[in-house]
Length: 282
Ligand SMILES: Nc1ncnc2c1ncn2[C@@H]1O[C@H](COP(=O)(O)OP(=O)(O)OP(=O)(O)O)[C@@H](O)[C@H]1O
Image (cartoon, rainbow, N blue to C red; front, side, top):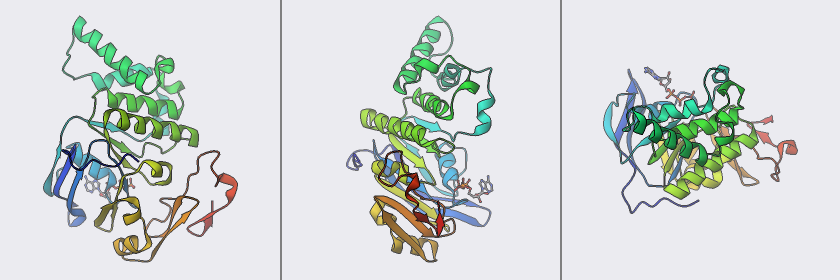
């Protein structure tokens, strides 16, 4: 953990933010400053408003109250979907180029060479140069996800919004993606807002957790939020949080599959350790 530097100007500021759809409030009264280089994990059960939060930051959803301001460019890394892999017409490099299009360079020879340089630099940052000329449909989920990160990096973002970027990836690819995001924030102080159902793969990097549930939220360091008392209050029903071998296991809540352990290969608690989550053998 690098620790948030809250003494300097935030890259993202939420001021009394609220979002409701009809008479259903997802959350309200959210005041939050995200510091350069900070890694914030956004957790919560299905339908608690995690994606809506990212959409609100991107200006794609109108807030019910308050405001969100970003100091710098905002990059977005979407979830990997199995159906995204059909694309045989598009090369990896083309996907990354979409991040550059519409930027300040425009067209013409000068614009083209800037575009190529920006794409190459982004590919380099994520170690994707060697497969960038292959059709997207022939690349693994992990390789495609690297390209999506590269696409977001072409904007030189001050903050990266990541919507379940590890979903559908095998454990080795998950680790590559997490390491890339961590390297970026360490080198460039890019903040990371990371929506996830599984905290454990990113636990070593997380500075704070924003936990959305039941129309409310909690924000704070992992230990302050991911504990039995806080989550029981937030859910309004009994929740138990256990630490097993350095991992967090949440039992209860409306959606007790989240935060299940997802060990990396070679961990002390490997996949064959047979530990129990939410009363079920994994
Ligand atoms: N434009 C909209 N109009 C009305 N309701 C919406 C709209 N967008 C989302 N919702 C509802 O708001 C709730 C929150 O949706 P959102 O996708 O943000 O949840 P989430 O926490 O990301 O869920 P998941 O973990 O399942 O991805 C859901 O009940 C969803 O159906």
